[in-house]
Length: 331
Image (tube, rainbow, N blue to C red; front, top):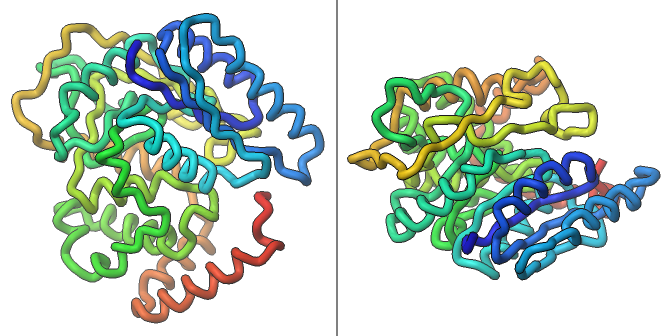
């Protein structure tokens, strides 16, 4: 396979080996590995990180491997963000997998074909392997367009990722306009939800364990569309106690079954998003993964009600606190 593959890993060699087995089956010509470092307060984690990194040394096909390994722990927000920036300094486009996202074999040719098909179409910014809501039954085409760039197995181009900003600095300018309402037409619950999420992301950047909300914001700020397959091509096996955001094995998204994509692909005749699917994704996928405490909900609502200058002052104060050595450790 000629398309570069990026592999984001950390400290779970058992899961990493399952994903690597599928990468090995695809035999990419270039593999770029992004690894976080061990947390100093977690006994034995240095050995787990070393064992995980050793898995990618098992390459037994012609392949160029590039490594971006951190000696210190950057966290599950900052490490992917910095690693992805490094990735697109090396290559123009890539297929991206994390250590717990097992792809169906047809995920790779699906991404490769669409990376080529939409390479110069700036309306499209993201190709996902995930589909939790739509059945291929009755669909004329093999994929559809969405505003949700689901990133458990995905692909994109440098020309799209150049818009990524961990601090979403465009948000204060857009927040009190009708921009979000134009994207999420008629869905007041989604408008309220994403307003709170973007307030939080602007305040915290990638320091508090997430990077993908900022990618969604970048896509929306450019009115960029995501491609979602008609059949699910990724199974997340990381719903367990070791997970950061995916801990419950009973989550409906855990170990979601995959199906086979058929070729040649049937392309949609128009580049238009499916609003009905986006509403399903918000209700059945986004909200399912965001269980908040009453305290967190109230805090978010209070933050959303604050005037923009006060929120900006809080952001500056919090950024200063996070720069203190006490806060630079990931816990």
